[in-house]
Amino acid sequence: MIVCVCNNISENKIHRAVDAGMTSMRELRSQLDIGTCCGKCHTCAKQVLHECLNKKNHTHHTMQAMAFRPNIITA
Image (cartoon, rainbow, N blue to C red; front, side, top):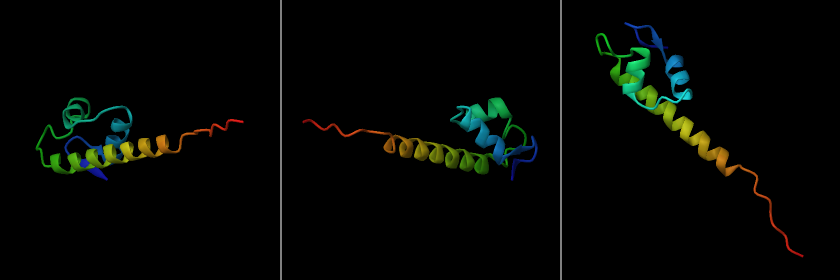
């Protein structure tokens, strides 16, 4: 889905930007020029950003919970 029509920024580009380490609208504006023309996309872009960050944080916590932790058995 296209989030920013003015600069042709898709939801996938925002996902890739978050995967690359971006965490704020300021970074997205700086790197992708999202929301720099008419500004109508700001709310949607912010929502997509937060969804990506929440998904990334959830995945990170899930992977930590699944980490191998051997049982220590003493004889």
